[in-house]
Length: 106
Image (cartoon, rainbow, N blue to C red; front, side):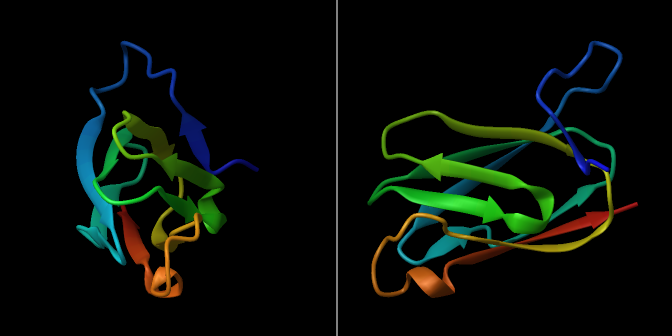
């Protein structure tokens, strides 16, 4: 049973909500995000220091965030809950504490 719909937003659906996220040693800004179930979302991710990543294991989402590149992750959450994301590219001694919480509500 899948939990997300990736890309391919149809014209019948609403315009995706865009959320800008900045990744830097050793945090995400913002590091706490709330979205609604079944509403399309696009994360626009940037970094100005080194390559980072963002992985939500429970949602099967994983993106590499490269300096100077367009880094976008489009998805539609299909289940509610609190999901912990973390950096998936080693970025230094604080890498293990680099986390982001995604709250999906009704």
